[in-house]
Image (cartoon, rainbow, N blue to C red; front, side, top):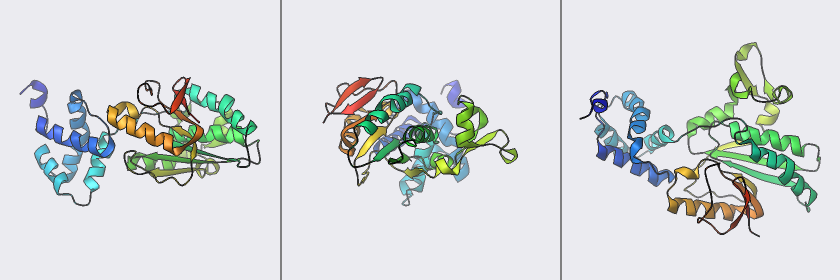
Length: 281
């Protein structure tokens, strides 16, 4: 036993780590590397305390016997990563505002509805960044409407996202005009801001597992799924990208994270650069 293991509150054996990460992989498609053992421990130890369990062996047994699936959801919530920010990777939002949406408006046929999906929206910063971009670019076009669905597998971050309340320093990067137009500030929200209802009601949040059936009734124009597939194994990546292609209209756009690529994963998209991809018509 090394020094780090001897200082732990609970014993966490390799076989218990393997059992838990196999469950996470089966449910989410996320691959958990060997070096994530300590991360697993630190994120799950609070679950053991809350459940009044005395070991990770007992926790594994608890999950096996939990027919409700509630603890599996808690496990997933604890392990999934939720790093995000308003207008993260701003070149994507610039491309939307300056190139993609003007082109869609210019070449529109009868339908004047834009359908957008933020897949893996975390605590909502990406979703509201998209909503602000869509509102600013499409509001002058009075015959246009847009729908924005934002999903995540983690139920707790979705609750945070739906509330739309953030520390003031989270929005400090935004122009003052944008802050005034889309956020509320006041004495009851000391050091916090809240997304104004007019914008918040345009964003629909929902829980969704990317590895399960989606059930979209209509094809989408734009999908943002950034810094998500990097955690998946190759087989799951290929399956997921194929599902994205099926969900998009011909010519629809897929936005990935800065360290992600479709190279050798799919031939159904063409690269536009900056991890922006267009479905081949």
